[in-house]
Amino acid sequence: MNLSAEIIWTLLGIVLIFSEFFIPNLVISFFGGGALITALTTWIHLTPNLPLQLLVFICSSLSLLLFLRKYLQRIFLGQLEDKDENKKFNVEIGKVVSVVETVNPGEIGGKVKYQGTIWQARSSHRIEAGENAIVRGAENITLIVEKPKPKKGKYS
Image 1 (spheres, one colour):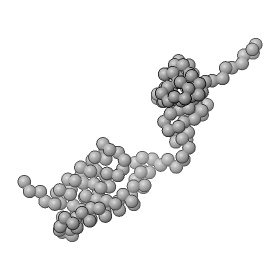
Image 2 (cartoon, rainbow, N blue to C red; image 1 turned 90 degrees about the vertical axis):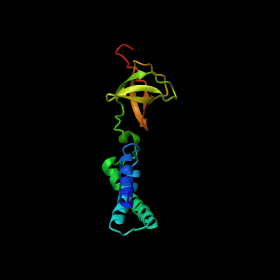
Image 3 (spheres, rainbow, N blue to C red; image 1 turned 30 degrees about the horizontal axis):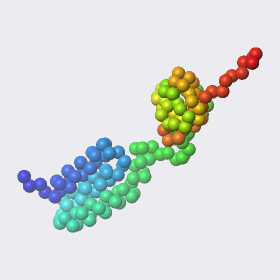
Image 4 (cartoon, one colour; image 1 turned 180 degrees about the vertical axis):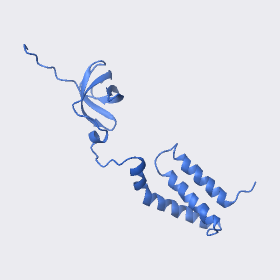
């Protein structure tokens, strides 16, 4: 079985584009697009030899990457214009959450339930599982929580 250069470039392009599903960083698919462009130029006899095909592949892949990546990231991954972590993850400051796994001071590893999801938590005080905590911020995907202040009663 003797495969033509157009078929090889097409297969390479398809494999690279589908590999984006397994390694999602929105880079590999542009090389797949470059391979498909190379397949097209080879099919219409603009790039009859391997050095020209490699030149077209490299130039078209890099051009696609440079000119389309930011645009497509906004479409597929969403645009995070605000760098503030609290807004990026839509964290509601002051929200009371339940502690699922004990949060130890200075350690990441405790867990809290926030908006129906279990989050890693960090605190400057020990908060036992089963207690409540108050959200004070977020750092990456870790919530910063603290113990609620005891309420002063009428007769305290």
